[in-house]
Image (cartoon, chains in turn brown, yellow):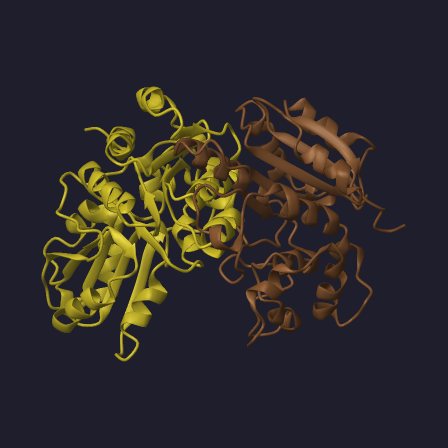
Length: 235
Length: 303
């Protein structure tokens, strides 16, 4: 292979559809694959302090993709940022590919957790924040991405209810809300987090400036949630 | 005599002092015993409240950051209720921890079936890579807890019970011990059932092996014993009957053999009462065991 690291680093936001099409063989992408795209890009491009060279650094920021369904946008961003070789994207889902339809942390460079079964990421994120704090690593931020329908899983509510009173201020959650929950109440997502003592912001999940502002808003003493609203899945 | 669980918090509290990797995760149950440890290590002793999915998930998250979590509650809520978390957050994520249960089979009979999990070891046995310790005495529990915490990032399940043998044996966290040697069969006693097995087999010409580490299963130890005592094997396990029958079959796969799996019955008793009453109801008292072991080994054992 002659594809160089420079090639890996050259990618921009505009390259993501092409990278995704390497996995799908199609210029069109399902809503589950793309609802997370802008959130992922802004996080990896401007917020997370992690690089391919720092994936074992105890002081790195951690990003935990809990909503493991439709991971093409995630793989595309990891490839664009040099965590994954671009040439492994076309093998997506294949027997010898590290890239499954749900990510596996033991196979995907840069993936902090394996996911697919919904409702595991936030408890793992709580533990990661606790573990870092217990080792005096007060700086790294922990980010967990979940979907609005994923919030149906009760395990999330165990984590939300604990993290607020525990004051886990290095824990961050971004809920990508594409109105896919069958039983939901408008405004209910932020309210649930706020009721547990979290700092919360709800923004347009396609607006990079708004996402960045919400991601970087101060929230002393409290965990922080950003609800990123995107077009409804079934619209 | 104190119980295994009386030893748990003092032992793990000392390990917290000795090893900065060690952390304790609780879900209310057992927190009082860690009162002093919480004061000394407030960041490494965490009580998540009555939230067992979070108990396991948060412990696995701590393991992802390099800690060695010790996770404790009753077996029903440690293994059964959050089983998918145990399967994925440790196994699939490639992390390890020490899960320490109490009250698994019928330690609190008056509490009823909601607080019993006799299938815990069988359930753990569906997963890859778990070590399972079943101590039979508080001293053995102390040894095996230390062994479990020191086992790198291994996945280890330690099953504590109020039932106990009268004296401890020098267990090593791996092998079966030979307690008595005979020529007409092997009786493998697990954990706190050793005393009852020794009483039940008094005068029989049978080898008695003692197991406190049941996974990995010491197949070589069983084969050695069977070499002298023959391949009639009786398992006496303090959890679901037959849990290790397949392990015995695998160990003796190339030899004609017979196996009898004794343990806690599958049928829900719907009785309260005492540990002794439940032991007898499941046929695990010395008199019932003598009848069942003798019936299986037959005349050669001198019954």
